Amino acid sequence: MLTVNIKQADFDRLIKKAKTSPKAFAMEFVQDLVSEVIKATPVRTGFLRASWFAEINDEPSGAGGAGGEGAMMAAAVNMKPGDRFIAVNTAAYAAFVEFGTRKMSPRAFVRGTVARAAAIAEATAQRIKSRG
Image (tube, rainbow, N blue to C red):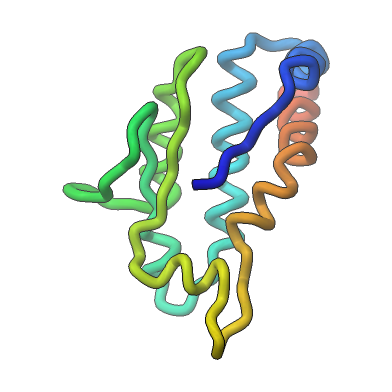
């Protein structure tokens, strides 16, 4: 599991910049991060992109419902302060695409997005501020 950690001082600065509540900022940031992960997920048949699932404070099983961006956004909307947003890709080959194999180069669609989390958070704050 990959984790995005934003230092409290940075979080406070972003909230102040956005002129919004911590809950509103966190929810929009998670939605933006989700959107970026989905966009970065390679598409051949669409199955990998549709295999994203998310839950709040519990690992999603992916059973009993449609996945993809809509499922992840629906979970993000229900976040409360102190919640953990947990997303998984249930496609059996997701890790092979992310990390590569002997025969295939890694695509790093998750790690690459997480590496840009600070920039995504800044963009989220700027967008919220501009709606002002």
